Image (cartoon, rainbow, N blue to C red):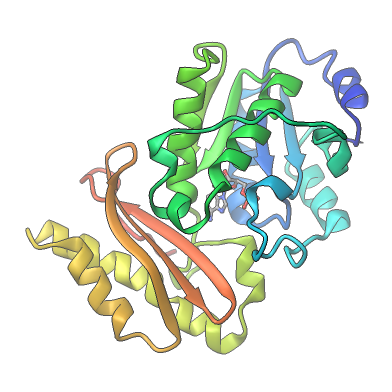
Amino acid sequence: MEVVRSVAALRTALAGSGEDVGLIPTMGAFHDGHRSLFAAAREESRTVAVSLFVNPAQFGPAEDFGAYPRDEARDVSVAEAAGVDVLFVPPGAEIYPPGFDTWVDPGTLAQTLEGAVRPGHFRGVATVCLKLFHLVEPRRVYFGRKDAQQVAVIRALLRDLDLEPRITLRVMPTVRDGDGLALSSRNAYLSPTEREQALALPRALEAGLAAHHAGANPVIAARAVLDTAPGVAVDYVAVTEFDGPTLAGAVRIGQTRLIDNVRLTDEDAAVEVD
Ligand code: AMP
């Protein structure tokens, strides 16, 4: 695996890729959710490229950009073991050089849920992803359904900015811990007590799913779980159309903000536990 830090070195490393590159954009602190994306890309791409960039543009001024977990040495060994060919770890100025002043502004899709709580978040996501797509020129890009609204924003970006059909979007299922908590780099912030409290989120989604199957309102059922859960502050619970009707929730446990979702469609619906 080659670790590259500049755009020039990235282009050199990808020169022999045979135009068959799978790209996984990440912010590092790798866990099994990331590994599932790496494995999917490894299976169908000649060259697997991963970007590791904690993107300042997608964090609000009061958010956790400074505290976001960073462990490059560990990430390098995880990526290497997963068969990644090129790991792109740019310094901030390689992506946003002095004078950088052009942004991708996603539309109404990006104004609700995460976009409403985190103004500018999806503008930062869409901008960095478009740049990465141009730099890497992948045939396929891999994203996790854990971030369902992000998937919807990227799908719209590929369509609206004419990157389709050159780039295909692959969406992988949410990977969970044995107790149901969706894996997230931010889980590292949780104390043991908070980790226990955080289980209210997958339990609420499971209750919402059961209610939906029983013909009842999934939002009311999910809220009933969250509103009585100790230590949980709810940002939102809502059903939205992301690749099919999706029950999505965001909560704060102490200083940590967690998101999760479950699709309400029959084939795929479960907050699966190992
Ligand atoms: P991040 O490093 O958190 O920006 O995530 C990089 C990619 O991994 C994104 O496409 C996420 O949706 C995906 N991802 C994060 N957590 C999970 C998970 N638990 N299951 C599946 N994909 C995930």
